[in-house]
Image 1 (cartoon, rainbow, N blue to C red):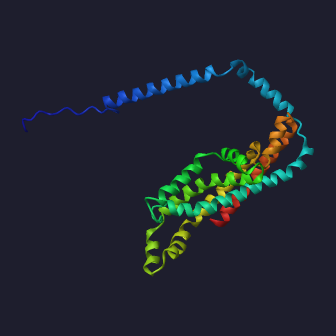
Image 2: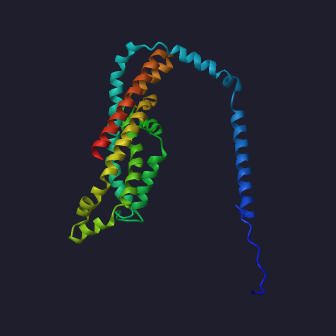
Image 3: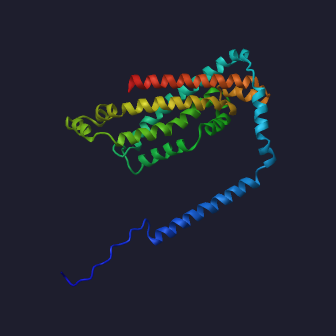
Length: 271
């Protein structure tokens, strides 16, 4: 045996002392932020109204029944406008998003220092602004109506489709690209025969999914004057025609269910 002393086994700790202090500091900071936020909300809330909210809500629900089903015939045109806004807006957004995705992807962009940052900036800007805000701005530019809604949906869709698509482009199998390039194919041919077949399932799936989302978003654009079923919804709420609001809600619900079914069937057929 050696004469060296036996070192005691180290005591296992979940965190070091410094890490433990940092954890407690973070919790204390979160508690202070929560307390400050609660005070801000409390100071700007009329609690008498909040206490009366259940009774007011039940009163509104009681006024919405029975639904005025005779109003349903007047919703066919707004529903058709809503579908057109979602479909045309998604198509326009996809047409713009596809070339942006190729410009934003590291392995297909012609310039990593100019074109890629510019494309990423457009994609991020599109995703940062809600379609309702886009519609509010466009109504003042192109006037109220369906056109403002279509452009608003398109501008919102560019960022969603572009982001998922350029990430898919960056994850393609490089071997297929090298094989096509080895035959002497041009850059355009490489994109057509090596890149596009790999990202097509993502493109189709993302576009259909975005169209499904746009159906829901298009139902409220009319509140700011961008066409669709939101117009009669806003008018009914303003005039306190609650039985009509019930019919509009039912029409929106059925439309969303139908869009979900179509979206599912299309994805199953094409992907």
